Length: 421
Image (cartoon, rainbow, N blue to C red; front, side, top):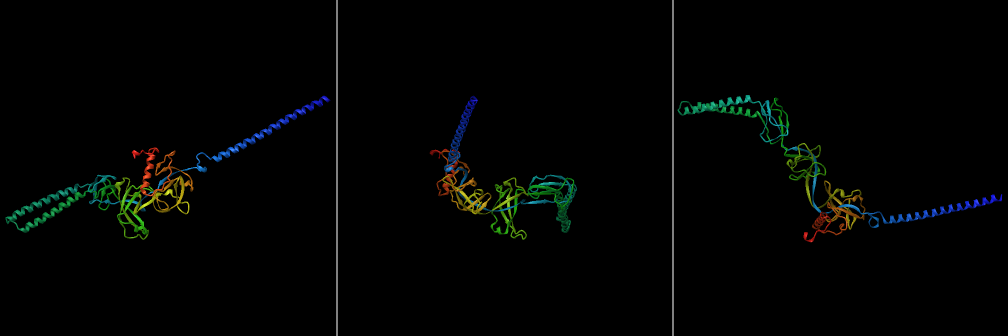
């Protein structure tokens, strides 16, 4: 019994030591874990203080932008209108004689000259009539000549000679009418242009009251623009006009205000202005085509013009961002006239200011910027990264700085040598 109790005491002591070791290992693991978390937290704090890669001073990232140096230029003020082009001269060719179409000489789209044959009528009967009239006229002329010879011999009277002369004149007129009928059998174009319509077929009967062809002078077009009455005083005869296919596109041709209707349309309250257009400037111009017409009513000199997208209008006052010492500075501006995607800056900027034209939506006042393009030329980054800091005091210096930036962009950012200009 005593031996059994002794073994029980020994076993209890051994299990106590095992339990003590387990508790000790658990405490050690807990302490080590806490230390790791603390070190990790310190590391994260340190990394947060350093900031993400690419951050500038104070942890602010430089925002890439494109800019343009503000310069003055002439601004053309225009008045916009939309209409369909018309051929300046269009003629419906009506036959001068009735008959059967024997042949057709042209087709739609053919270019013809004034007087060119378009179709031929069957004129065999008229040709024979003309031959008879020619014979009668010749006979009458011969009789007059013989009568005059006899009159010199006093064999016939002067009255008889006069009667024969009158008969000869009538015969000559009949011949002219017969020859005219033969000529009218050929349908001819009254103007130079392009055949736009053909209404007849070979073998069909034509008359003198229906057109056989339509010919248009497509080289000279015109546009009739309806101008609001309140704007009509700005339009004058002789003003230049530009023709565009679509909004914001480049002009495809130029025109000139040729005439202004002196009355106001009572229903629409507009004045009709006719612009003459030379279609030869662009072969795509055709009668019936829908186009936009910009009439240049005024030219303003020495005005700052920027892309419309560079102006932020999300607030009460329009504003732009300019670059100074590598930072974005907000400027409130006043807008003037607009032309397509360009707008005049009436106040708020000076020539030589570097204005952000791309990337301004991401800017805030004082934000650091990284110049990617200047006046359309790529800016080289690196040791020679450019920032515009100096103030320009003349348009000539602005243009000189533009050319210097372009030259550095073309030479890969290398400064030109002194002897090479």
